[in-house]
Image (cartoon, rainbow, N blue to C red):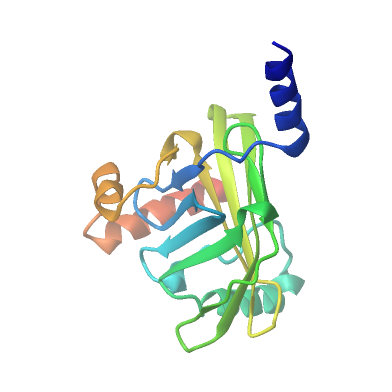
Length: 203
């Protein structure tokens, strides 16, 4: 009994190895997907822009007309990403919280953009958000990736996913396609939808 207690106390003191972590978040119509997993001593994040980096979520938050030049610069930096990139952090640089909350800061990983630009990731973290509004109670998981492009800081990719579109598995491309819907063939349908949203917002 004494030996068992000693082992438990020692484990608490030195810390137990983090269990394997897997998380995939996707959208109903595939736009930007995060596939995150741990393997050996590393954490990997595969970021997929299914419609190309030109449609990556480059701008998030509240901004004013004065901010437009800054936002344009950041958008142009995000646009240098490959349509698919896998970034890496050492697990020792990450903290895993309850549920799907985690944060990773600092890595020596270097990836390259479409034109050979040096992309250096810095932070990857999640935020759990609960909303209670006109649409009822909704739960989301936010994922945010920050990085430098050729030494220039500022760009980030941030996505908000309904929690039911995040699973604790490393989904394959085939599984992603099976879980999502195909976008409408006619672009006019999408234009009509956005037009309706715009009119609602103007009321």
